[in-house]
Amino acid sequence: MSIAANPTTQFVLDQFDDAYERENVRLDEIASVFMDEWPSERPTERYTYLEDVGNVGIWRRNESREAQAFRAVTWTTDTHDWQNKVEWHRNDDQDHQGRRKISQRAQKAATMHALMRIRVGTQMIESSTDNTLLPAIPTAPDGATPFATTAGGAARYGATNGNLLTGSGTVAQQIADDWFSVVQQFMSFTFPTSGNPLIDPMEVMGGITLMYPVALVQEFAEAFKWSRPIYSDDASLASPTIGAATSNRVADFNVPVRPFVNPYLSDTSDWYAFVDAVPEKAFYRQIKQNVEPDIWDRSNSDRARDEKVEAVGFDSRAGYGTGPTFGAIKVNNS
Image (cartoon, rainbow, N blue to C red; front, side, top):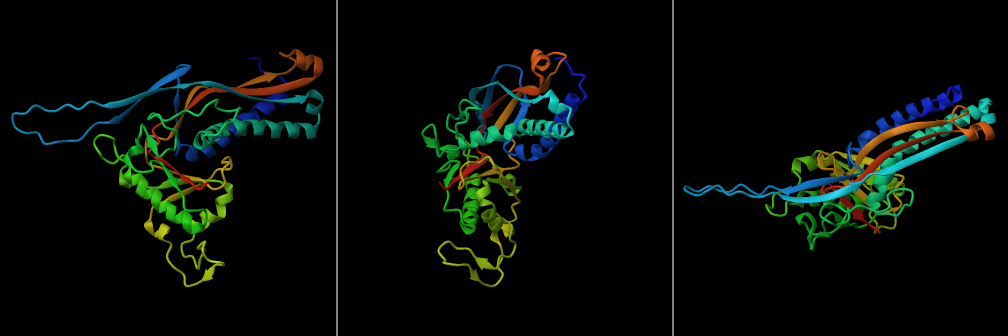
């Protein structure tokens, strides 16, 4: 890659670096709740997930120790190329106003690269079609979609309804009721052979991140943020009922709830829960190549010389997949 001497082009590149790092830091904390990240060495990576190690049993005198084999599942994940590019006319480069526009566009390009994992993660979460992102939604190691009631013909993770619950509605009281169902469901997941809990109850009690669409901001605030509500928002009532301040049972249950308003969610009524402390995240990103810049100016581009069109572009290589999803639950209200 030829690095341009043009100071404005370098200004754009510096703006990208700064904006990308700021956005990455901002998103790291929230993205890490539902998406793991690690380096990749091959165009297609092969993964193995060890499901169960069996139970401890009594060892009777004169009997040999019993050996129990691991249950393992293997799957693969492809790496894809990702890119974006910003162009401008050299005449605009000579204007102060044009310089500001270049700066803004460069920062937008940085934001889009940093947000890519949220966009792709949302695509996998909703199993949606997006021709600019993943060509197909990867299934989980058990062969089912990321959120499903069954896998392999049995109740997923040993619990009826698996990690796909039917919600009771989108009024605050209904969301709070469904939240308790989510907590109970997480604690009901078991290993397939031993019957041991998949998730330590203390991990559940340690905190849950709730991902929900913009359309439910007020409802979630009412369900989880009011410590002492003074009216009922029961859906069966024609209007709110004024009453004495009462306890918020969600707050009193003392399980930390972290809100994540995801503007990329297209469904306006479904929401998702992720156990913060579960080490096996529901989704992951494998990175083959971090974001790298390219610059087009008079020193390396015929178009820049002949048409006065300069540009800066960025590309990376990464793959996305679905891991074990017992730390994630979808509440379906559609």
